[in-house]
Length: 134
Image (cartoon, rainbow, N blue to C red; front, side, top):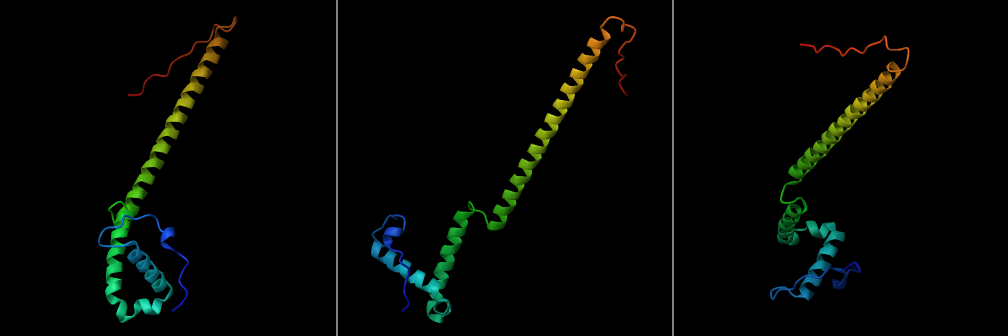
């Protein structure tokens, strides 16, 4: 038998031990799985078929917990949708900020023009507002 990893039960986060499974059984199972991880031929052997089926079911359980109860494809699509919504919101905010800046700039220019027009000797000019387009 090959050398196993130095993982011990103390390295594994604390798990509630039920009356059906002891800490020793969990430790043994962990060592067996670590050995199978390092010996692919043994894992693929006929003698491990039942174990592979159980591991497959555990893997599906773990996947469902990883993606909030969704499949990985659904999770990825939802994440992409949220990213797009965030980008669109940022673009709208940027457009709003640019509009406000342009409006403020125009108002400042109009104030400067009015102050120039109210100076002495320039009273002959008038400001016409553009007519609304129908």
